[in-house]
Length: 233
View 1 (tube, one colour):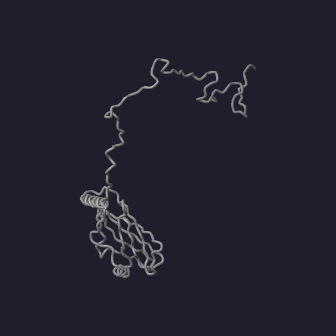
View 2 (cartoon, rainbow, N blue to C red):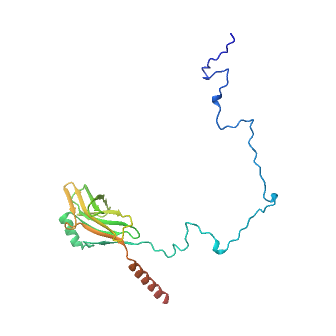
View 3 (tube, rainbow, N blue to C red):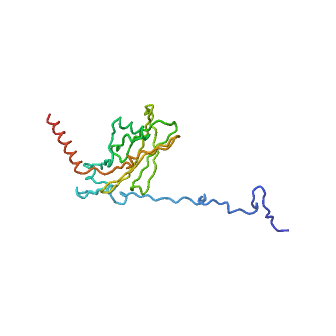
């Protein structure tokens, strides 16, 4: 018979009598097809200048869009302060320990970390249980909503009868012309019960706002006066 044998080679999986064009790799240039040559010409060979010089008048020098030479020299960063609205700190040591003894915890200090919008506070608790957790319940919308912030134990703060816990609360500007109101109270969870400190049922209220411009100007004027007096000595 003249019929050709087209059986598959079991080792290769393809017909040995016909080339399998499906094995061509796309993107490989055949050897018989040389790479195109690039032409190169030089400007001076065509009578052109190798260097092109452009003169700028001082007023025509372009400015980079992201840079403004008028900014940054005398720019003063925004400064924020906190104002307690219905409480005052620090308490005397006697008053502080009386409150801790009576209600098992009390706010010892609160401050705004310099150059930031981060509130840092310290809470002192009565050491009535080894297992304990202290939370700051906080509201930024007059108690329409709230969240609980877990505090951290401060190593080395124990005085035998008391321990200290600290917390940090970051507020994100802008705060508007009236500033931001922060309301909070303290919760102390122990194996013998849960205790609260809420500023005699009024909660702790803070106003967080930008320092008034006139205050900054007065401080700058005072610094300038001190500088001139030191220069005269």
